[in-house]
Image (tube, rainbow, N blue to C red):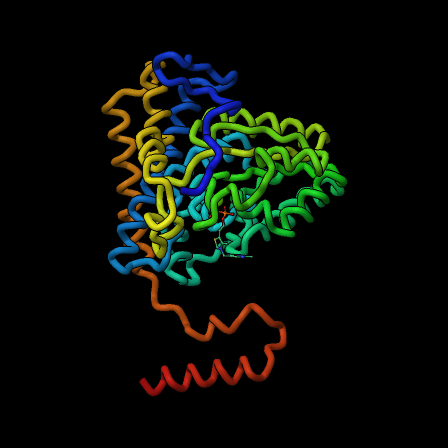
Length: 356
Ligand SMILES: Cc1ncc(C[n+]2csc(CCOP(=O)(O)OP(=O)(O)O)c2C)c(N)n1
Ligand SMILES: [Mg+2]
């Protein structure tokens, strides 16, 4: 079995285990904020679980599962202001829900339908990047621009452990460090890049160690502790707004679901680690914390889950009510002056579809 780094160790945590490890509280987060954070987590989880079902029913295409990554996404976004920007990867495909994007827009994206396109300025949310790490230079460039304009807008970009081996990560991190760009580089270290384990990704003891070479502070947090992710991101936002530049946050977990619906991880993953992660998954941990604090009861938790399920049901209906897309759209928006072979392909497709 491949060697992987333990998710324990020197990781920053807030949520205890209800036993030997004590809970902490985060300054500035009262009951209302904690419950909002819980709703955000449940919304993401419900989106993810229903999407796997919709995929099996043939209602959406291949889908990148983010089960147990919700704490990294909800925790980091909660530390931003609405004017701040988010630059996501495919693993964060539903992060727009946290900014008021309709469920049907995200589902349409996965259905390959133009109703899944959005204007980034409507949500201060950039397009989802599927080519690994390409969103990092986008975020850094945006953040540098914000600094040049003397604005105090911050950019958050999320990417995987595998992304830290890409040239785009190196270029983005170098630039961010030198230019003191107000950007937060949040690495979702789920210890796998499809079937490539972290031990084949780097010989460095931790990914946060990489930050040193760029002159950027590196922080390691438990990626399944939503409050630890929130706290680390909030500190990074404060630094960025104060003109102190970027922060690299390594949020550590262990991927507990397949890479995507097209993947069979039983061929390579450690089943015992998966079992441990599933038992200790991020929403259950937060739920137990809130109950220990006396902030959440069973009935309220059930109501939050029912509300999210209803949103999903309405979302899939709205996405499926969209009229079929115009197939010639596939050929648009890449070239101002499309090359003749592309136009010939488009005409051929339209002729075939017209004949059908
Ligand atoms: C530039 C590029 N190379 C290869 C791929 C194929 N690919 C898709 S997902 C993936 C693994 C990425 O792993 P990681 O960065 O750890 O993110 P995770 O999927 O674990 O969230 C790869 C190699 C791609 N999408 N883009
Ligand atoms: Mg990964």
